[in-house]
Length: 360
Image (cartoon, rainbow, N blue to C red; front, side, top):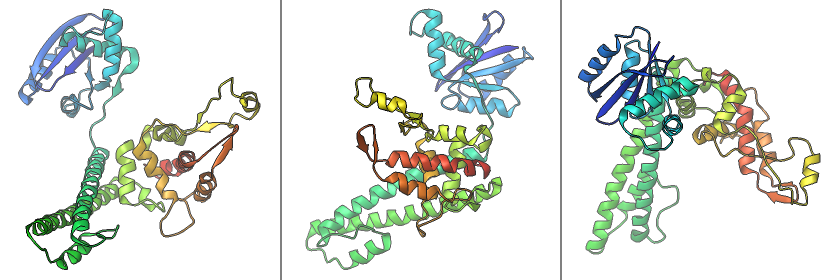
């Protein structure tokens, strides 16, 4: 088995073949970032029938090459840049990177040390992740445009516009404006432009949600049958997690989302230290600040259906009740703090099991 380490860059890629037994370089090749050079690289690598590719940052600059190799039946692993930096520091005695060949060799050595992760071909989860990212950008653009429209209407109307402003309401308000002078005329013209932009963004958001729904239904996921989870939330959960098969248990899913409990600590000098040590292991838990924030929020919202005051999702009817109980301030070891993060983490942990069963 020969390991082919690749150090990808925007314009060039450097590949180095390393023997796993001796860790010695047996060949190297530098190519340009083009399909023609990709074919040259693959033809060069075919001299080793038993081979595996180790691409540094295969989800970044190396994504295109990694997916191109996978489509042609090659085995590819992703090596984090931090792992290659660590190996380079230990092998060279410093953080300097002498050349691209050394970086490619470091990526291969990092793979040998077990830091590589198999790269999977892109599928519907990748498409859903792209649609979710696009939706986030559209929503942020709409908020920014509405804020600009609010600022203009504040100067055109006494008291401005209502907080919940839609394109139709803004158009109705603008029709009642009779500009006095060039300044107000320019303000009104810009406001009409913003109304047009909001309508366009609204249509794009609607089309985005429809496309998400069609992809989720085509994937065979049962998430949308869960009360509180619609096509947007289902697409976010599937796209951001790449499927429930990646997690061996609901606890692993909760840990990925940052909802797994983390034991807090109390200083030995604190008066309540000895009291806390006598309590059970769950005496002081805090919310984990790590994990995937999008997945954490997406897993928390289904417990709060907007139209009803009760519920939770299938299999977890007490999720909302637990959330309400934890929302009240808690007193622990002599200190009182709000439990917003704690309650959100609790609800996400309770919803991890049904989300996993539904085939995230």
